[in-house]
Length: 321
Length: 255
Image (cartoon, rainbow over all chains, first blue to last red; front, side, top):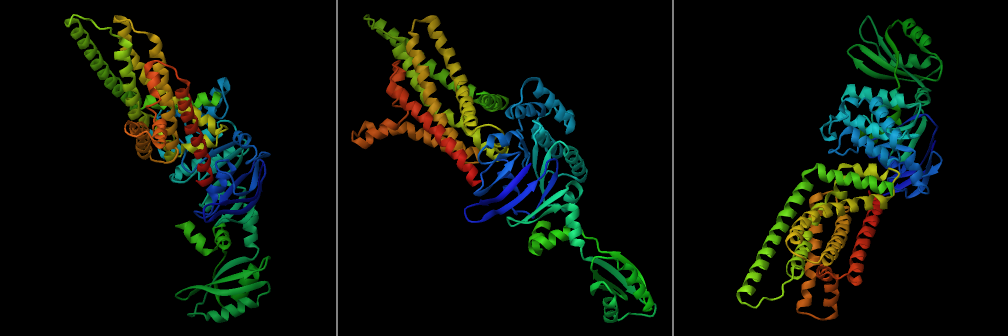
């Protein structure tokens, strides 16, 4: 549905997007992930024909963004970072205007306006001025205008930015509900959002593509070396952590063991193992050595860690801020 | 065509849902009405004087009322045009709605023409109020309507040119005030350029005078349709819209 090849955008001096390539299949929700200023918006703007790429190209629904921008625009619905609303228009009137702009007319236009009002739950503000709407409603009207012409592809730039937690959940559900009919690209710098809504993830950092894969694959890949947290204690005072580490490293399958934290006489060790199940061995070894096994749990690998691994600490630090 | 109409309607609507349209209409009608009242007062006084002298001079409404009024209207227009065009693109850029327009299946030129025609229509509405004044002349006098019609055509052509310039300037900034002030400056400059011809006859002065929008209105004011002047205005309109299109394109490459 979307195919991006060596897409590059150069501003006066800096390279905003640097030879990015990826593919999106029909009906998928793809999370476009990266710290602020990574080039997400720029990439989206090139896909929606808002600006032309410096080099490289992209096709949307089989049409080239440079060669046939009008055809691409007909098939794309775009919600920019701040919803493009005219404050002096009423919701219904605005959606009618956008519908006309996208080529709808007559009974079909009316039907689509009714449909998107219902779908995006903006029916009750239909006769209100857009300038008076709350942030949550503004975002939903923004989504409504993006889907008014039933586009094949939806491009959503940070659709949940600035919403409260309840509104975020509502918006995510709405987006998930739209996935069947539309191919969706959504950008975000919020990681759980990708884990919750997306099937596929494209991670970029400083304009470069860092990873593109399905969310589950990416999690598995990072988990390839499973990491466990083991808390070891002793009834008779402190344990010598060096001894424990040596013992743990002797267990077959363990590739690395180290002391992670110490709270008084409680020592937490991080044990990395090759793929395979070493928890039983671990537990047995600790108990047989005469220590207490207080806790044994997998260190959860979230996208956050993958993100940190992939984009490097500096970029992720910026993203978290 | 359909897209131009959609944009035109939206723009015109946004003039009339905000106070700006009513403010412009009221101020224009008020100022023009004042000029009309003055011109008529002067005309009546002249008539009485010539009768008192016992040797009535031929008096002509077209020459003595309509013509000066039309050139007044063309000058007042200069002051109002920035207020019509300043928001056209600046506001869309500021609020981000430009992204909606540009990513819709609409050509740039359709957006530009829709906006420019809406601005011209707004100006046309203002001119309608002046027609109200002239209607009195037709009720109580017997002026010739043809020079008046040509005068209106001239006003529209002149406004078309200045509005095109204003539209172009509006694409350059996100700030309405800056767009308005810059447009006003350019309009004023295009008006006063003509003054050099008062004391200088060198080639450069003639070129400057030729560039002045006011010089080219003279023939229309007299009720003469001079192709030279019409072509000047059409050129200004074309150049203004052409630069607007270029500016919109560069907006994409840069932004």
